[in-house]
Amino acid sequence: MRMAMVVNGLLGALLLASANATQAVTLLAAALLVLNHAAGHAVTLVGLGRRPDWHARLSMLHGAALGVAAVALVVTAGRSIAGMAIPDMPLASLALLLAIGVTVATATLLFAGRRGRLNLRAIWLCSRKDVLPLGAGLLGLAASWLLLDGAPDALVGAGVAAFLLPAAWGLLRGGMGGEGVAGQ
Image (cartoon, rainbow, N blue to C red; front, side):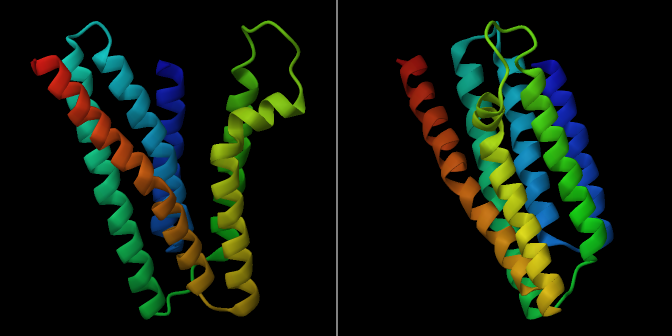
């Protein structure tokens, strides 16, 4: 779990740096997606061995931070569309391809200590929740390149951010529900 947290944290930092260099909203969304996983692992690691209300409070904090970041990303996407910003598509595409490669490699390594055979279906089932938004980001960047407009990139980035809002709400609700049970 620590290794997954570190890998996701480093990949998120790389995607944030790439987003800053390229002005691609899809890279910001990909960084948010990856950093969400790192934060989830951190909450689990910190909450282990502590009182149950700690985990609930940390999950609630994680959900609040994720919700605020997702809404901020949707606003950033809107500002990008209004400002007619065009990202550096080749560099942003390379960063997303790297993120997809790391995601698939991580899913492959999950099976190192398990019984059974490693096959493409197992890798797909483990990595699809990350690969699909990253692949959508690649499509958004390709459409931006073809249309010479930054709107497809921003729209896909906003879509990925909106995809994370239910997860943020679930973390908030779970934290509030767990805190009420522990307080009784």
